[in-house]
Length: 309
Image (cartoon, rainbow, N blue to C red):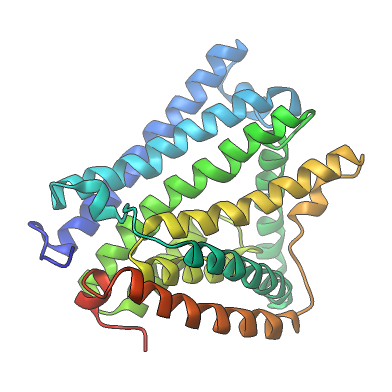
């Protein structure tokens, strides 16, 4: 795991960015053309109608397919060039303990409090009125798309939403950002914190949400720490899935109670909740680091790029 890859990290990063750009264009084209064909409507009209609740199943399918193309395939391609065992290179391995999984659950709880507090803080940052107006318009577009995909009229819809809104993005995004990008940037900079932070900034920015920037930045850092300390991508996927699944579950129960599901997307909490979050995260990560050293002694990325002490 700690052997120097056959192609340099700078080249890997350049290839990853180039493939990402191509994959984004291809996935957007695929989504538009398939939606237009299935709905038998002009391209622009189909794209606008895709967020409507009656098209939820199609939106889920297309979103999963395009995320796979845009995120998973570029990361896998670069990993294949860097290693003869691309999945192992990305961090997929079977060495983890039930204690690690339990601690990931505790870390997820702490991250929820932190995200809520940072969401409130994000709202408090003074910005020009014109910028905030555009940011809110983009936020509403994102919420409309999410609400359209998250329309759940039955338990089977709920299970399907867990798969395509919670699990699939967790896998594809973690493969790209933690398994590929963070690994490359950490190796390139020879600094664990630099790799985690830069990756987390890109991870948050690519979602295109100003009001969710700080919460997603914090989430990215936490996910990055889980991956770096454990060397196991499954654990960061597990936390990402839990984080998404909580929102999907909230949406499902709000729908069943006849309440607007927008409430589930409002992550704001009092800023002082960050104190609770930091206490939980500090305690959980201390235990997680200790457990991870026992499961996977530092012969993987942590040994090559230093420690987080």
